[in-house]
Image (tube, rainbow, N blue to C red; front, side, top):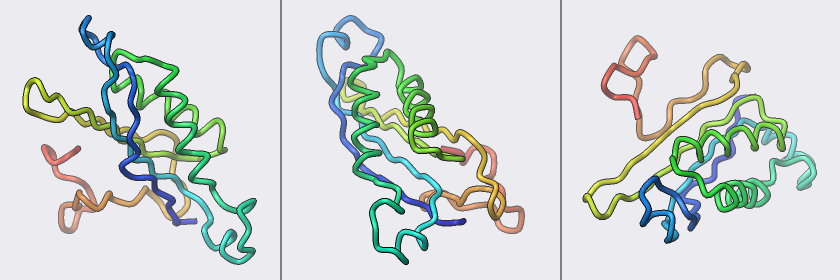
Length: 144
C-alpha cells in the first residue's frame, strides 16, 4: 500500500505559546497531515466504511489541539500524531504545524513523522522537498 491520504491547510484557532500574552488569545495554526491507506479498497466498494475518513481525521486534529492548549507547536504535532495513530490504526503519519509569528515577521514550521512506513520502503518525499539526485536522501540543510 503506497497510497496517501492528505489533509492540507487545516486552520485551527487555539491557545498556543509560552508567553503570557499568548495564553490570553487564540492564534491560528495550520496543519497538514499525511497518512497511508488503501485507496483502491475504498474505490472498489465506493463505501466510506472502507476509506480513511478525512473529515473524522480533521475533527480529531482540531479537538486535540483546541483541548490541549499547548505551549509548543512541537507538543501539538506530537499529540496529534499519537492520537491519529491510535484512533485510526495508522502505521505511519506525517504532521506539519505552521505558526505565523507576525510580531517578528516569520513563520515557524514543525514537521514530524511517527510510526513506520513499511510497504514499499520509506514514505514519499513531500512535494516541496526534492531528494538529492542519486542518493534518495534529503541533503543536510534542506530538511524542513
